[in-house]
Length: 102
Image 1 (cartoon, helix red, strand yellow):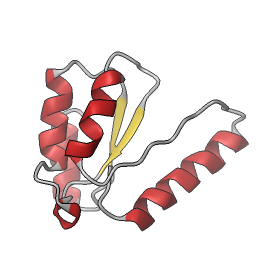
Image 2: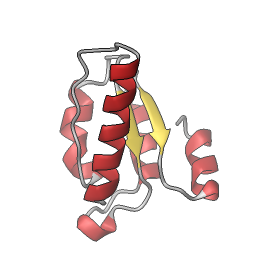
Image 3: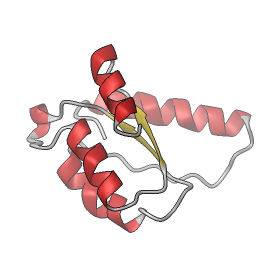
Image 4: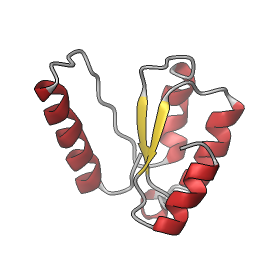
């Protein structure tokens, strides 16, 4: 979940390359510009521990109201079982994301 299409494509390319090198096949990639657009998909996958979410903090450039921190609180409230990686690039935000469970 990132408001930057370039960042989303780079993350997908990196994960795809790593999965090929590790022979970890079968991954499906989905990308979203805002937390609000990602929530229905994440809710459906909340019990699946084989889910990896990369999460930016600020998504307002694409119309998002919720922040990455808001998303982490929401994911905890639905007992999300996957893994969340903070990709904000801000060490203070990264620390806050870790405290929230990323």
